[in-house]
Image 1: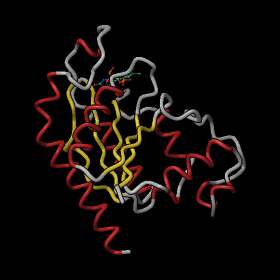
Image 2: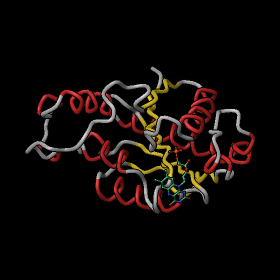
Image 3: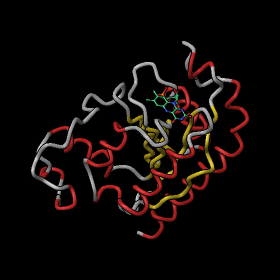
Image 4: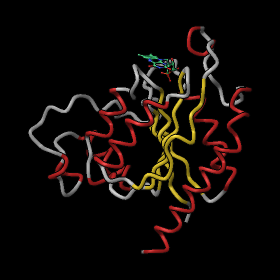
Length: 199
Ligand SMILES: Cc1cc2nc3c(=O)[nH]c(=O)nc-3n(C[C@H](O)[C@H](O)[C@H](O)COP(=O)(O)O)c2cc1C
């Protein structure tokens, strides 16, 4: 059975650079074969963004999706639980990752545990600070199985930040990162396979 790999977008902006980078990563993932790639962003999932956490339920206490107080969190829980692996493609916002991404993580808890996760970041200097903060949250907070952080840091040419153009999957600068990206994606798929073999 194909491995279900989610690509979680760290930017929910309507004209973001995330879509292009995520699509480029997805192309390489598909080329490795044996995967079903799911794009996790507002453009692909009707219930994102999930919205503020308002209810008197802590995700740590939730035992099953129906325990979540809102339908969108129930759907989100089922989807994340169905994944074999996850790639987070995140921009750097003010030396960290976006509040929108944190909100996606905070709505759930047990669903992230042991999930093989790759962190890929981008920004004016590769978005490394966002990656460090994501590592802290995912590894130490949510007990995910962090496969890679700091290896995939895409430095955006300034036109994609200040100008009107946005990254698309054919952007020339991404070629510099191709080899490393494929290497890290292979590592993710190996971790997914090991987890399956252990069951
Ligand atoms: C709110 C905000 C804060 C930003 N802060 C940083 C930053 O701290 N470091 C950096 O290198 N780039 C920063 N940038 C530039 C982003 O990395 C760049 O615009 C990137 O394309 C944002 O991702 P997105 O287009 O997918 O939303 C910031 C951009 C925004 C919108």
